[in-house]
Figure 1 (cartoon, rainbow over the protein chains, first blue to last red):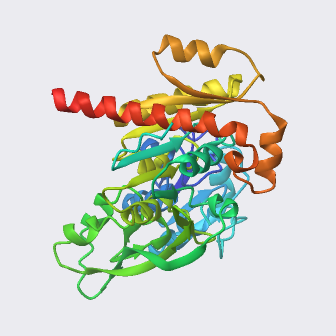
Figure 2 (tube, rainbow over the protein chains, first blue to last red):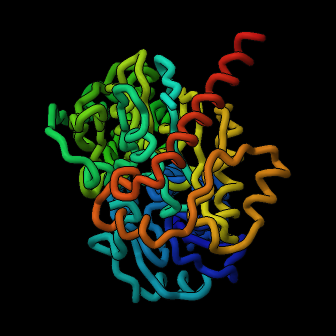
Length: 120
Length: 295
């Protein structure tokens, strides 16, 4: 199983970015092996619109089955759900802290978007 | 002096900054033209030109854009549609495409690139276009539906109702983004309305760069002269931009506007200001025409 995190850096001690669609990077972590993959999200970060949808595609392509992030809007939620990816919202400050919370089972999958759309 | 009236001319009244007087200039120009004129309200997010005109509605049409719909049984999730769409309006997740119609601009590209013909188009309503006749002015007004964030296709629908071979004055939305570009395209003259303040100057510069990139001849109207400073005038002379008119900061103008009155009707002493502005606009359009002829 692989877990995706929204991050503003490339290592586990990087800050967890609380935006899903416009996070600068996704860190894809395999909690069993500890393997870490960095996916640059600069293109979606600067997209005029549709950043959440395109970021969801990026995460889906990475093979991650969960995404841990700060907030997730309705279109990203719909896209991630369609891809079978579980969404976990957290206020953890770093990726490592978010990973600890995930491992300890204190995070629960979101059942809906937790922020409103930027468009309507 | 009879006003110079060419058979056809498309004039866009624009500005970087909002609230500088675009609608005032567009309406009063339309009022002084001595010929039938089409006035297009391209500020489709909040059209307001109709507030100043008494006329009868001739038509009201619903405008839709084509958005994709997928037949999942034909889709093999190749992802061509999603790679083509720059707006993120279609995503392929797992084994099926997911359409976000509210992000779609209706270009039709996804349908064309789909190798399995799994996509077809359906209409999505975005707003209306109304035509209102008020004496020698025909107002063509776009009105975007509440909750829709897709102005350019509706502005194109407004412009599609322009008759060739007549005079058209377009009241553009504020700013310098896509809706303004949609209003400016294929016009003969751009009139940029600004005010002599630091904010007015800042946004005028952005608007000038935008209009120059599109290649439309432009002139500037300085509104509310008397407030602010002289930096707008200095910028115009440094950039060789013609100042086509100056409208003083006159409380009577603001009062007439707030009552929904046209300035040249409420304050006859302003008629000559707008008549001279129209002559300057016509000259600017004619000069450009001559340059085209020389090439």
